[in-house]
Every structure is written in C-alpha cells, then in structure tokens.
Length: 236
Image (tube, rainbow, N blue to C red; front, side, top):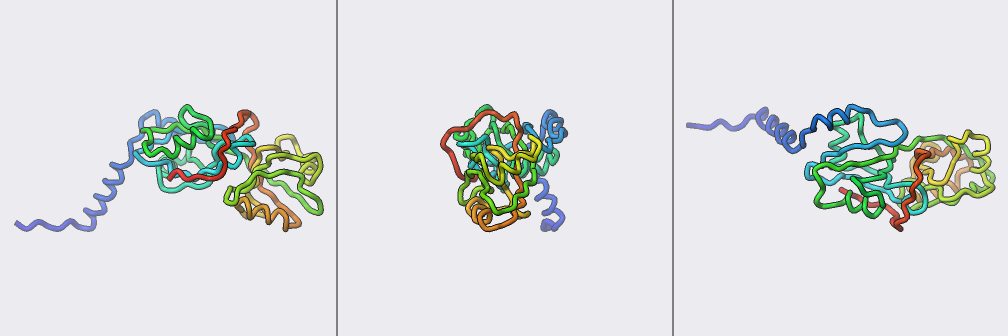
C-alpha cells in the first residue's frame, strides 16, 4: 500500500504543535499574576517560566557600583524573557527596566551568576524597578556641572555626582523635587536620539542646546550595589 506524503498543511500543523509543546504551560497562579498589569513607573515582580532556556537579556551594570541601580535591561534577545513577554504582554519586561533581585539574591555578582547560569531553574522570580522619563532642557554656554558614570557601550550615562554650580544645578532650582536631576539618574537620549556612553559624552560636549531624556528610578530605592561590577554582559 502506498503511503501519502505529508501535505504542506500537515507540516504547518506539526510545526505549531512542536512549538506549543516546547513552551511550558502557565499555572493558574501564573495566569492570575500575569493579568495584573505592570506599573508605568515603580516596582513589580514577575515569575518567568524558563523552559530550559536562558533569559536572553543584555544587561548594563554601569550604575551598579556607585549609584543606586541594579542591572539595567539594555536589550532583549531570543530566550525565556522574550517568550514571557509574548505570552504575558501586561507584565512584559522592557528596555531600561532595572533588575533589583533575582530569586532571593540581590548583589550584582550573584544576580549576574543567576541570570547567566547554564542550568536555569524551572521558574525565575525577578524583582524590577521601572524608571520614569523626564525631559531636561539645558542651553549653553556653561558647564553641565555633573560627573557621569559610563562605559563605551553603556546605555547612555549615569549621574554619579552633582556639582554645586552648573547648568543642571540651575535647572534643578526651578523644578519640583520629583523632577530634579539626582544621583543615580540615567541620561539615555539627547535631542530625541539614544546614544551609548562614549558617543553620548562627545554629543554633550558638542551640542549647544541639549534636550535630555533622563530616567528616574523609584525614590524609595535605598540600597547600593558595591560589588565592583561594571559594564555590560549578555545572558543569551
């Protein structure tokens, strides 16, 4: 008896079925948690099913040692987080979110080890802070009056220190407390364009009018990461 070759429809169904099987099913608890929308600004927690994958996150640790940040999400590649975002868009992890705790660890070194582990757990609990963007307008002449922490390929620059005089200090004097530039804030765009650290420093020196997009983290973040870990790393 001749056996018919599988049709294109059969092959398509098989591919879909294979993809469904490789994605771990969500528990009732996970579904309920995922139905709660993450805040536009502030702290939240997600439980990411790993499915034997790595997270697929590119992290920026520029602020981890000297300012108030955790591990900032710089990029999202194929992996558990991308799959989580597709399944649970209300809880999606976004670029510029700060990872403050992974499972029960909170130091930079321990979080990096967890995130990049070759033997991930079944589910990874991630505590995050989502920053708020404010627009800061500075016009030269004058010095900015800030010390910035950056790496060649960091996502912008982090404010490490404010001087007593300068364009930023003058700006702050006319702003409400919540919008003032402070230590730990991250400059991610100049005049509507995102730059990595080294290039951003050149633009800051060259441009006369600076429309800065500054990310401000939740004000109640108090712990400092002082692990001597700086730069970027990729968990994918």
